[in-house]
Length: 80
Image (cartoon, rainbow, N blue to C red; front, side, top):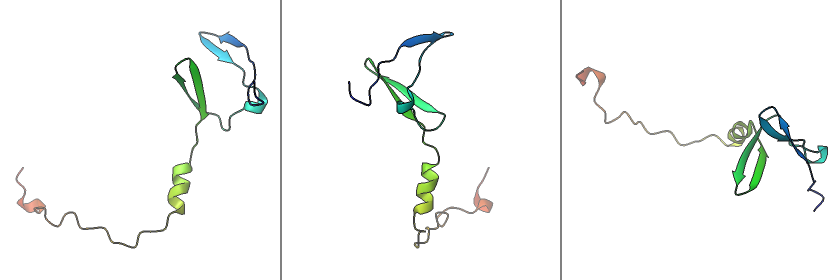
């Protein structure tokens, strides 16, 4: 075992199987995503707000957006 590994016991919590995560292996936040790959469980913290931080760090676009309505018929010409 490496220093990032710990032997833990599994136990029942109602109808769920559970384990206690040792303090030195705790995940940040209060939510996680768990998935199974073969006989391994992978647990990752949910990282919130990273997309907003990334978007805030981007430079504004200088190029104007194209007029996508340019070739469309006007609403007066559309038959319903």
